[in-house]
Length: 222
Image (tube, rainbow, N blue to C red):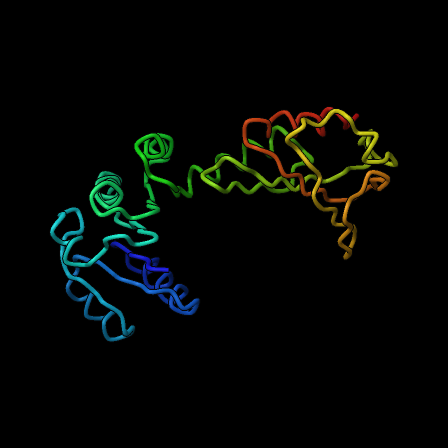
């Protein structure tokens, strides 16, 4: 894939190395001359010096029709402008931005940024979920946050212990138990599969019904 990395220092350096190891085509834009020199000497890739919030710099970097652009600038407003230019003018297929202010996550998504990354926002969501559902181990969202995979632990007080999956008829139609992790084994669930204490269920659902799914397992804990 053709991937454009805009701004950043240590994060950009690590990301560039990782992308190149996966054989992606990488283009870098940075407004720090010394850092551009460093990246040029370290990697055999195009490194463009200039302010990436300027459309002519994006044009000079040949970002047209890139698969992904990742904006890592310290200012949220800069990252938003870069992503909007890249998507609307240069037809970049997917734009990703980091944000310093977690309140900007939802705003950026509404304004067309495909993926918004905020460490503070992510941590707050994990804390919120952990405090609400004691048996929720982990959750992962993808496809623009429309689908989630939830890793749910079956605790000793859960009413679903020793029940067949076919007997758990309270899950929404668009939710499915796609895998069970039992000790060191992976169990492919079937209708007659019996749930055991300490099982970890991987439950796939859309994000609209995620809370309902988690509530079902939380309420199933007596």
